[in-house]
Amino acid sequence: MQKVNLSQKLSLFTDHWNPRIVGELNGQHVKLAKLKGEFVWHHHELEDELFLVLEGTLKMEFRDKTVVLQEGEFLVVPRGVEHRPVAEEEVSILLFEPASTLNTGNQTDSNRTRTTLEHL
Image (cartoon, rainbow, N blue to C red; front, top):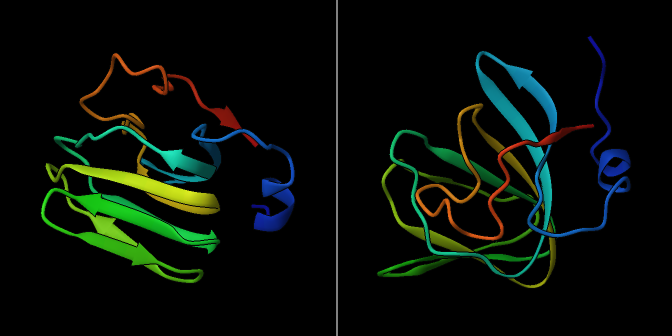
């Protein structure tokens, strides 16, 4: 058992759209990522995802609306719902999702797909 300092872990990387695992529990991963720009439209057939904004502002686009998340706010994207995260400026987020979750969901041919994630 070790405590995790999110700011310290975020200071260990600068790249965008490349989640790192910082914790695991009950088949779930706790991940940190930095985002900037637009991600790919995608969905996850079997997994819900929790996005918690730690720093910055994140826009979560859906086909019928956009939800804006500020620091300290989170959103759960239900399985099967197509979405696209957008960060006009750099955003730091915490993700909580099943360990099986692929970051690009059904878009496995994306150059942003990460099949192996680093543990911090």
